[in-house]
Every structure is written in structure tokens, then in C-alpha cells.
Image (cartoon, rainbow, N blue to C red):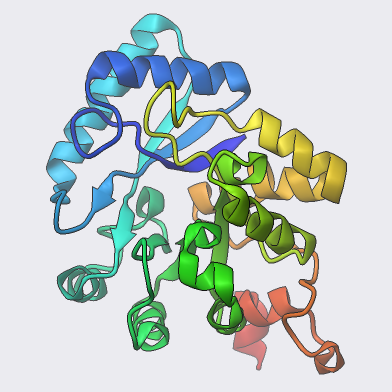
Length: 270
């Protein structure tokens, strides 16, 4: 399994506090069946995003994992917050903040409320060559009350990641209810741990994967935990997806994923 949202690197944000904790988190992840992790420290007003420091911490962690015999492939990215400065810098440097230097950008909304003009900002990021992935919308109180804006963003090309602990109920009843509604409607593209430590927010994916497999099908669970995030990790288009329910007008005809991910050859012929 591939975890695209993980606060694994030590001493950068409210995630791992030191290298020892990072190694233990990595050990837990590997034992749970995770093979690839994108370490995504916060990039916001509180935690400075410094690519050189991130690269150094990632290199030190890879060395420590090799010494411990922990088989994990580690890449870097960030948990991108939508401040004006961040957005302008990302537009100017489209691969600075993305996951594993691909076109995919992991975006976190504010904890409370939704700023105006988000749709325009998402469009600006897409124009700059990035594919937004919205992280844990099921935990946003405004979207919990009304998912209309999420539906619009998805119709415009937004991808969605929900948290494994939300699926299991550890993030509260409202987050769990919305997570399962999104899963039932096939609005989710990725499960990720959003791990911060080894106790309250551990790096575990298997239990949520198995629950999704039982309720929504083994193929869908595989897509969310392996096939889709592996495509992102490798910087490739997502594989063919199930059509979402209650999102597009079924009379449109062409599947939604074909409208979002047109193959280059087809585009050139047109």
C-alpha cells in the first residue's frame, strides 16, 4: 500500500518529534503493509516549508531505515495550506510543493470555514500544471454540513483523499459518516493515514483498507490504497476509475475519468 499523506520527517511540524520516532513510525507502517510513503510536512504560516531541510531529513531517515532493515520507499511533498504567499509561490514554481515532484499537489483546507474564491484558486493551480488532491474533506465542518462545493470542485477536476482513521471512527461521528457517504458514492480516490505519531495518530492503513473492501468491494479498496496512490507516487495518470454517483449527469455519456485524464495521443489527434 502507498501512503500519500504522512507527517513522518522529524522536527518539522506537529508530526514526528525526532528521528527515533520517525523510525518507529516507519516500522509500524511497514508492518502494516505500507511500502511507499510521501512525507508531507505542513507548509503554512506556522511551519516554514524549506525544501533543502526536508531533503536532508529525508536522506537521514532513509539511512536510518536501511540500518534497521525497514523496507520503505520514502519520497517528499507537503501538506499545502492555501495562503496567498503559498499559492503565488506554487504557481511560480509548480513542482516545489508537489508530491514526489510530480504534478499532484496535496491541499489542506482550514479547520473551520471555507475562504471565498477557492474555486478560482484551484483553477489557478491547475492552469500552472498541478492536479489538486483535497485532503480529508470529511473532517471539515462546513463540508460536513453541505458537500455542494466539494461536488463542484470534483466536477472541475479535484481529486479526494480521506483519512483512514475517519473511516474507522477515530475522528468523530460526523467525519466517519461523511467518509462513508463519500466512499459509497465513489467520490474518494485515496486513503491515507495522515499519521503524526505512534499512538494517537499512528501510521496504519490495513484496517481501513479491509473495511472498505468488505463494504464497498475489494477492487475499490485496492484502487484507494495501492493503484491510485502508486500512480501519483510515480507521476502517472490515474488508472480507470469507477464512475462516481450523484456527481455528474449520467446523460453526458463519456465517463468522468476520461474527461479529466485525456490521453496525450487522443488530445493531439483532436
